[in-house]
Length: 118
Length: 423
Image (cartoon, rainbow over all chains, first blue to last red; front, side, top):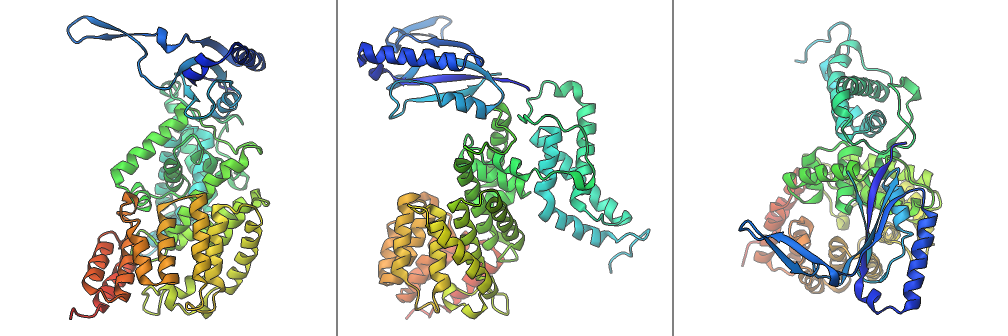
């Protein structure tokens, strides 16, 4: 069966994560470990991103040089908090995996974005 | 004078009729089966169109096959196999539709071609596609409508529709939306999107967006057939029952919708003795089944409105407050501009034309109703009843600007001419 890779982008509510206590963070870490074990056959790569307060943006300044600025690309309440790359048969399989992903801020705009890779 | 048939064949005219008939009745079957071979919607469409073109010639001289759908499928699949072989090198880079049932080797013959229409329908109606794209793809791919016809069904321009269809097809392949019937646990949530599409199909047939006829019985038959198929697949689903009831109860009025001269007759003026009582009886059984689910779904509620009309012995005895109440429930479940418009019309009959006009005015700002002729027609009718003649005339003219159907146009022109001269 042909397989396809998908990037699962976790758009967390950062404030929820930052204000969470140790117990809640440990619970989320444990949930990710359980998720990873459950889906070890399809997970290709996964990373947990540092918060957007640590981000730096580089762009061309239009005069042959570069402009380096503090902060994320977009200032939103939800931010890219981590990702998984999975290798599955099709979108239905990718969506089934995405529905099992743990993340902070399940209410509001927090969500998992499923993007096919080339 | 038509050309005489050559070589003992049925002749060009008969072949053209048979091809047109096969286009209406077999398009989805042929395309869905061809997609199993191509795993590429565009190539499949191209091969199916090619097969219909070949049929025009082949059937005129060689006779119309006993099973036109099988002939067309075999021809389209043969063409697909040729193209795939010829372009094998280039095609290795193409993303293919995800079909985990394995490749279909070649053109199966005759009776053995399985019915793949549900795969096509569920792929076109996948929730990963925008709702409007699902409807557009189904009209285009499952029903074989042209892009122009699809655009009019949607109240959008043809260029926008062409772009939408291209984008949606690209998403199906790039995101690998699978070409299959969903698993049983996903089925209910996937059915609602399909029902919405079948509903629009029926609506398109019930009042054709353009052309010489008010009705497109082919689309009505297709919507009825699709609804029946879903009924077989999900016999316990209340919303499938609701959609089937809605279609039966609405279409039961068909014999009374046109007068002897072919002009449309308003629901108020229809000879109810000509309504199809057998269809109404079947629809009423289904609507009761649909309403058993609590809370009732949108299709059950709309079917319940149709049931109120079906059970009213005369227009005057219609239970309008009940209809307003059903639309209130519907708007809570699924607020749409058309439902809001229908509620406003019902308010006009329950509480008088002034109240109806006020309810319509409340919707006047909705841009989604701007190109919708029935908003203007409803307005014109209420103004007419209030003897506000110049305003009624303006509203009829507004409706005419958005109506392409010839029968509806002549009806509106006649209503306009019926207005009394200004004092």
